[in-house]
Length: 265
Image 1 (cartoon, one colour):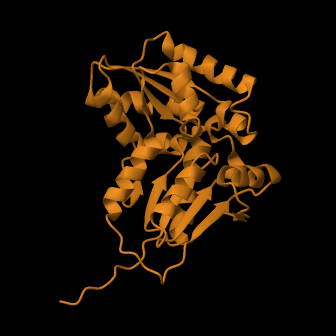
Image 2: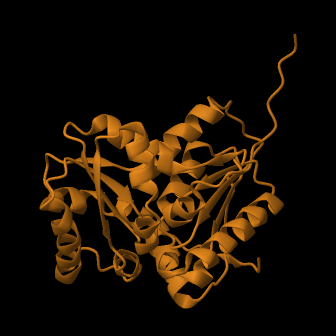
């Protein structure tokens, strides 16, 4: 039987505050044959401070926007969007949600069941992580800390400044006094400063990175992909607001000049 090369899959990445940019770069590097479309709803930053009604509306618009771009498989890089989508009675095929993956990993990894979550205010208020974790491990105790300043801190490139380290330490103090032994990085901004968080929370606390778990799940779904010289590397960046701050953040994170395309949803 003659073997044929499978048709390319376009991977969509849905984000809000640009924290998933490293994930987009990692996916594009790992599967250079596959077109990747990254869509960030930058017009509504910080998404974690917006109303649940607005966030849910934007989730639907953004998912539709990625599908219109031809995305066959969509990864939710914005945990705020994933948290407010969590519990929806309608399962959406082709969507990789990091929250259930992280909840299951934390429930399994925690020796004592004392699990911390550092996330946006909207994610904390949604109660998504406690619901998911306690459904798996009823005796677990989940303690969450809202960290609304992390996104702006990273946008300004100030995460390693004295004031940046102080802000991170302050957020984590609420979890340290609860003696958590496992910490979920519940905001994509946290993934970018995981080494700093590890230093501040202590070496004995296990960190669970939902975006890394989502990347593993994506790899499992895609499987090995045959190399090809015919398909060019394709990473398209779409934003709902391409202001100077957005462009500067993208170039700082990716360390190269990339001009995003502004779209209307």
